[in-house]
Figure 1 (tube, rainbow, N blue to C red):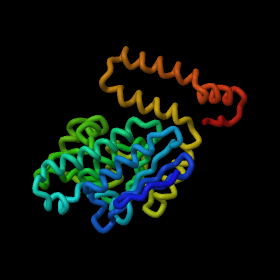
Figure 2 (figure 1 turned 120 degrees about the vertical axis):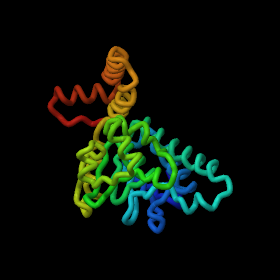
Figure 3 (figure 1 turned 45 degrees about the vertical axis):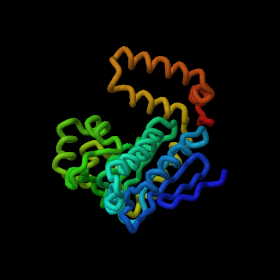
Figure 4 (figure 1 turned 180 degrees about the vertical axis):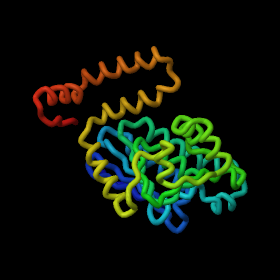
Length: 261
């Protein structure tokens, strides 16, 4: 399949691994209508049986500084325009959350506003030591988007979510890891290599199994105990009947490495 040509992001598919890079370095990778529209399209392309891992990062010094306020200020119907940009971003995040592929966000620099929101949607979040995280929305009289009002209370608790959103506190990479927003902090020079190695490791696993884990975790905070256990029972039964499930058990019993589809 021919890889798409984008203006504000780059997309590369190598076997089971897709790599998306936010690519407006001269604008701190700020999100404009082009970037979010392209991001939604790239996320859709990743939601296929052929993709097991998606690595999302930024080019240059920033991961993403949030919405491109300069672009927003030039349109007459500002609210309507921003709603369209947010809708595209939300379509991307929804696809990332519900696809079987594991999303690794490799936060290479500042993640602010919608960049913060996008960074923490990763199933696994790697951060360079120099990375920082700040909400910044209320600083300019706006409110959070990009799923942060959903994920932050679940990741850090309501009190800390309130602090981040209302005071615009900036967290270092180490603080973000301590708060539970980041999986691992690595040296700046090692970020790309670490993300690549992790992606290769996950690409050797079962996409269906990883996707089922994502499904269970998404439902866990709205289901009752009994509803969640029923979901667990149904999913593990389905996985046991799947080709990957049979291969995994057979390989374990034969003391060999499984070869998943």
